[in-house]
Length: 220
Image 1 (tube, rainbow, N blue to C red):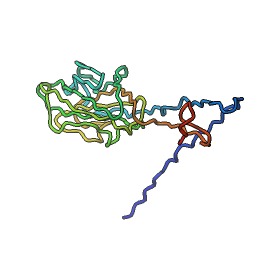
Image 2: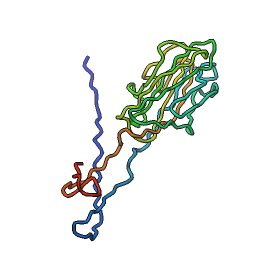
Image 3: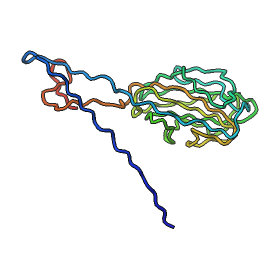
């Protein structure tokens, strides 16, 4: 049997052209051109969490730290999801940061996974799963790992999601739903020193320089 699949390809956004007002300047003087704004992309909505067995089951993440974030003794949320909107990890592209986690259950084995939405599209893609445990742990074990922020990540504020799952390792596709017991936590991540989501290009380039002394030609 031959099926038909329809693929919709969204076009790239059109470039925005801006023409500055004319200004009188002295011959051979240097004129500085500056563009500001538009350095971040429009914030996207993230998927709502779906849990097959919601409730304070004892399967939860109790202590979490990453970069400058420290969120200890967070407890077992009955909704199995908490967005800590007031907590933001400040990170720099190319740098490495240690994450530390401890579950809240002394008796039941838990697995942990972390996603960071590096391209700020509102989706925790499989390749944005930055860490996972491969064996179960209890509250007696503190899990630590290093997370490298890629230089290809977009600068600006994005999200990080953490899943604590009971007795079974989650999948890289489990960022929105879990079929067993567990808990999700979500945080903000502010990225600098990586890739700008929006770049400015001056055109035409003739007669433009990148420095105030007009010695370095502008190359775009």
